[in-house]
Amino acid sequence: MHAQDLVHLGVPAWEIALRTLTIYLAMLLGLRAAGKREVGQFTLPDLVLVLLVANAVQPAMTGPDTSLLGGLLIIAVLLATNWVVVKTVPRSQRLRRLFSPSPTVIAQDGRWLTDALRREGMDIEEAQVALREHGLLDVSQVKLMVLEPNGVISVVPADSRVYRSHRRHR
Image (cartoon, rainbow, N blue to C red; front, side, top):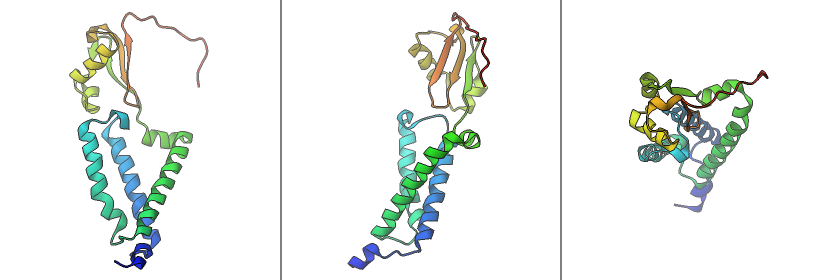
């Protein structure tokens, strides 16, 4: 390997940038489609999947390029794309709907909503852990249980008071 090989791109810079952008968006949408988990809530299989996918897609981003400059370009494109996504998504309702899931009711009025649990890839045992974390022993004690967009489970106990606001929220 010559010193020139470190900085000479094997393919045009725009191709590396386009490949990287495409892989980034595909991963973002794929992880979004996978469910309501944040990085801190990844299970071991989730982590293994992300690591294996990252390793598998590397050649798709670089193509035949193995230069140091190509690697630096990929890092720059990933950082810039991530910055744009982080700054843009919260400001656009359409993008928020695309990248942020809506809350899902998983139990209501003392009953599990098994179709909703199944859609979210949860089982009753996992949901019962959340019940116990909220100090409840059984779903019969639940007025409402919601899987929030960030993966947190909110629980409203059946014996809780309902507060009604006279003010309208937009």
